[in-house]
Image (cartoon, rainbow, N blue to C red; front, side):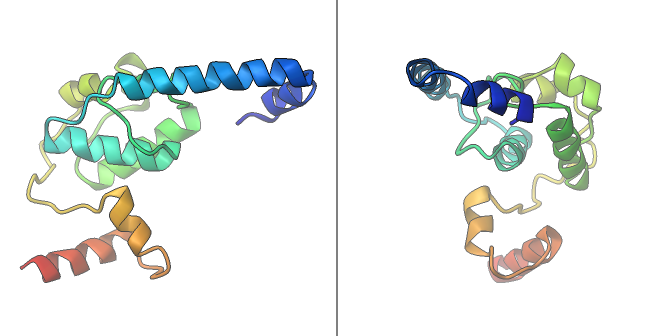
Length: 146
């Protein structure tokens, strides 16, 4: 979160901070209530990337990038991770098509291999102490699934 915003929050009275927290919880509940799961391998891959970069438990295909906490730095990280997996789009496309459902329709997925096994956020957490790259973890996973 931006330092200016944190400073502003710290300057709020306890009552206003409590109100802000209640509003944030209400928004989080709305997002969870409206959750729509990914329908395709591309959407699932994008949802996993978004959840990991944005540090969210789950991201639905209709969740808005900005509304779930996305910013320009995170959009760069998301685009870079997606490109490594064969899903190409520009930073501008993230902001022009701010949901996974929209972004998946405009992204170039010609290099995306639907048979490619990527680790979900949960699976990645199981290997957190292994200190291996994502590519190395994917290779290990492929060998054990064969």
